[in-house]
Amino acid sequence: MQKQLLKNFAGLIEANAKDDLLLRQLEVERLPAHVAIIMDGNGRWAARRNLPRVAGHRAGAESVRAAVDTAARLHIAYLTLYAFSTENWKRPKLEVQALMALLKEFLRKEIRTLQDNNIRFQTIGREQDLDASVRREIEQARRDTETNTGTVLSVALNYSGRADILDAIKSIVTEAAHHHQDPAQISEADLARHLYTRGLPDPDLLIRTSGEMRVSNFLLWQIAYSEIYVTETLWPDFRRADFFAAVLEFQRRERRYGDVKTPEKNSLFVANLK
Ligand code: FPP
Image (tube, rainbow, N blue to C red):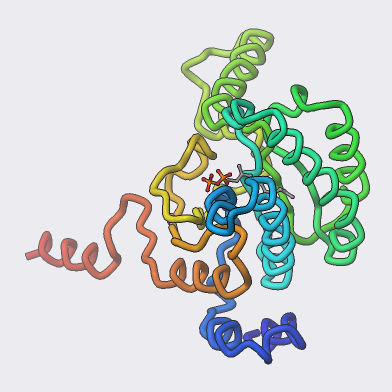
């Protein structure tokens, strides 16, 4: 199995000792099924180089390509990227336009790669408020990749975690009224089925770049038990080694979901028997 992982990166990592060393430490049986990323630091990356913010986003789009490629080669089943929040409309008009143009360019240029790597593309968020030209490109990419069975790439666009929950509540209440359903019967699973992320498992690993310790209104419901990994690396510098390092750290964590460790549980049990 480990050999398969090395094979998936054949020709790409041998020349890079860091990539190679990190990849060899990954446990293929314990890879996260769903990785979500808050891509942050494009502006700071540009400022450090005396470049306009848009140059940071353009460099960030390269990191998107690298992250999608790495996730597909690791056979990560779900990759979710936070590209544009509902709050991002407050940015200068030119920056918003540049971000939308980059997204369209990414979809047009990368569609072949998405196909070759069996990646299924979708978006999460209030897509209806996006410009018609962006919606057309999204629809095309979605349709072209809808039968792919590999990594599901979800790009969060015009996304807000609170809006996600609010829209789910509106939809669930409407549905419950229609079916004369008792509100007391509504379960967490029902709500999850009405979120934009319906059909996706909750993220196992949430990565945030550029060192900020915030979740910034991203997947608020879904990250209840996600392992959070924050790196100082700015998004435009985030490459394969950074992805591997995040997964490695995830594999070192012990996930208890509010429970206690099994040995401790056993010791309590033994204590009770005495
Ligand atoms: C945060 O950096 C980044 C964004 C708001 C946009 C993310 C967009 C991309 C990576 C490029 C295009 C996306 C795709 C899917 C092709 P920031 O501008 O908030 O950085 P700062 O905090 O340093 O100012």
